[in-house]
Length: 240
Image (cartoon, rainbow, N blue to C red; front, side, top):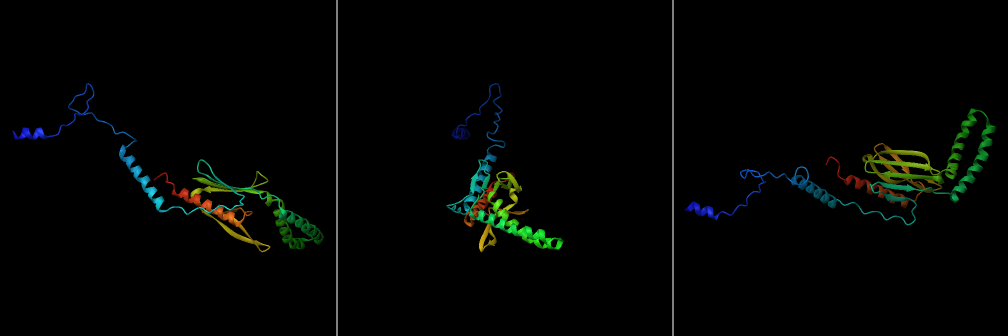
C-alpha cells in the first residue's frame, strides 16, 4: 500500500513524441538546432564578442583632433573601411613666380660662367651652383603640380606621388600591419621659415608627403591616420 501511495504522488511525465511506425520503447533522437556545433558554440561566440566589447570600452580611443578651417587635403573612408588621403597640387602662386624669375636670372649667370671656364676642374667647381639653381627651378615648375594619394586598407597600404595629374613620380606600398604611425615633423628652414612634412613610418622605413600643407593640417592628417591604424588593430583577427 505504501508503494502504491508513493507512485500516486509522482508528477505525471509527458510521453516522448514517437514517429509513425516507430516503436514506443525507443525515443526519437532530435538533432541540435542552430549552427554547426549546436547552441554551445554560439554561446561561446557571444561570450567572446562581449569580452571584446568590454575591452574596447575599457580602452576607448582618444578624441579626434578638430580639422583646421582652411584645409586642402581630402580625407574619406570607403565602404570597405579603407582610409583615403588626397593632397591636391598647390598650384601656381606668387612664390612660384618669384622662384621661376630667380632661377632664370641664376642660370643666366651660371651657364655663361660654366661655358667660359673650360676644363674638368672648373666644371666640377660649378656643379653646386647648378644644383642650387635646379632646386629653385623645381620649386617653380614641378612642386606646384605635385599631388599625393595615400590609401590604408585592412591588409595593404600604398602612397603615390603624382605630377601634372597622372605622371607617377614615386610609389611605396606594403602590408598594413607593418605600419607604425604617422607624424608631422620639421625638416628644414627656408628663409627662417620652418618647413614641415608628414612622415609615415613602417617596418621597411619611412616615406613622406604633404610638404605644401600647413603644420596644423599635417598634424590633423597624422591624427586621422593614427586613429585609423588603431581601429584596424582593434579588429578581431581571423584566427581568434
